[in-house]
Amino acid sequence: MLKINKKKLIVIVGPTASGKTSLSIKLAKKFGCSIISADSRQFYKEMNIGTAKPNAFELGEAPHFFINNLSVVDSYSVGKYIEEVNGFFEEYYKINDLLIMVGGSGLFIDGVLKGLDDFPMSDDKVRNKLNLDFNSNGIKSLREKLKLLDPDYYKIVDLNNPRRIIRALEVYYSTKKPYSSFLKRDNSYRTDINIKFIGINPEREKLNIRIENRADNMISDGLVEEVKKLYQYKDLNALNTVGYSEIFKYIDGELSIEEAIDQIKSNTRKYSKRQMTWFRKNKEIIWYSDGESYFKDILEEIKL
Image 1: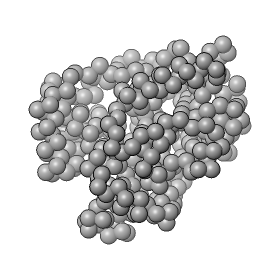
Image 2: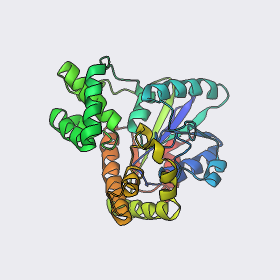
Image 3: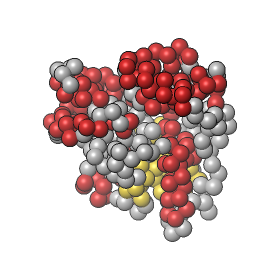
């Protein structure tokens, strides 16, 4: 139950395609509050279909923030997100008591609610060497190195995000210590806001069906055309993500469209499992298999 006399934040988490967006909108309408996105792929205004971003109707159902706030050419980081969200909190909570945060980017959520880890300074020489490795041998080479050198971080990192893999390897080669050893051991959440975690995690079979249907719908909604318009930016970090990387390979003739769709489905399933590996560390999350069927239970759990 949420305590009174504190500003309140409902955090809705779970794997991709679990139904987080619809639950967040339903709760926002119920309580008359706003929604802040913690999905790092939905920040980019040029990426709509492949990120399963809320559509125009859904965005009109409740005030949304940190969606369509960036361009793919913008340089952005977890640290910048934390800074901007904290600034948003300061202004929002002056006149509001309740906010909903929703998303599947665990690193961004924990960054806001716990703070950043204390990592060593970057080493340009090491990073340049790793970038050369990536450009010459692809992301698979980096994944193999990370799996060998830091298996703990390998289990939770987004394996389709070369920037995060490169950063982890950079830390290892610079310090001879795994990236995971620098992660915060203090897992306590900030106390200036009253936080309630709600998790949506459908049964795996149902989730996989949703993932497959979503991928098929993305293709019919024009994902290939969206990716073609972004082809000139294919090497930017924002585009190194599931749903885009596979279509780039199709455009380049490396995959047939059928193979690309199959890879999108497979990579999304893998990504959803990594998301759950991250979120299961948080013992404060109250889990439900479905936000629609258990809406009354969720309201009872929140008890505003």
